[in-house]
Figure 1 (cartoon, rainbow, N blue to C red):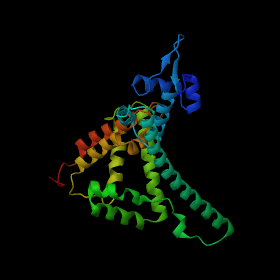
Figure 2: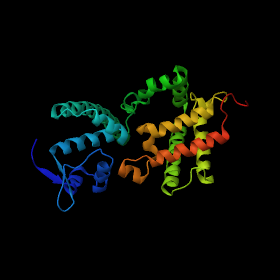
Figure 3: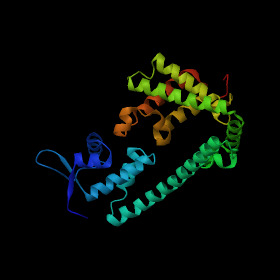
Figure 4: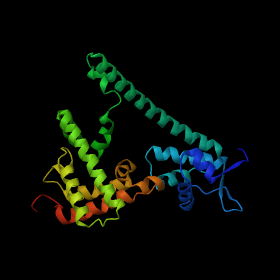
Length: 274
């Protein structure tokens, strides 16, 4: 690769990130600078740029920094290996591009039909909006009956009920993030009230253990809370501004701790009434 390198300010500008983020990546050993100039500024060569591109791609795909570090740490075999890894990333990006293109086309068609007063075509309106892509995962975690119950419940909801349910999710996320950013105690009355609302929301979804009064709700809620930290797809819903800037998970950790406290104090650990 080229012997040229770039300053941290240049890389931050070109990559659409910040010097603070790059310094954080250095501090956790994810992206050390190629060299440090006499003035103390970090500089990065072409190999470092490839590594940064992979980091940013993996972040876009929802991986946390610890998982990214593990993936990149297992791959130290040079340019050919990096190119192969990027080909895998490219395949994932193209699949996402295709899905987004389908969504864009379906929305454009709906807009055109509405403006022309034409008939809507339900068969094409929801192309690219496929909640069943989680079918295998739900069935693996909670069984085929759980997926069937949840899927039937969702399909039977009216459009207003679906919108209300989605707004409830948004409101819960906003409440959690606000408390986390304010530095609230997970055991505080405010945090425990949001935890109560969160569990009530979970209880209303058929097919989950929270909906079954005879299930071990405590284990389910605490296990789900751990997943919020471990799985970036869930944790992203509770990311604070600092989390988005630094790749941390303080918001998800706050939610986990508050739900754990609530579950220990309020939920049964076995069959209801035991």
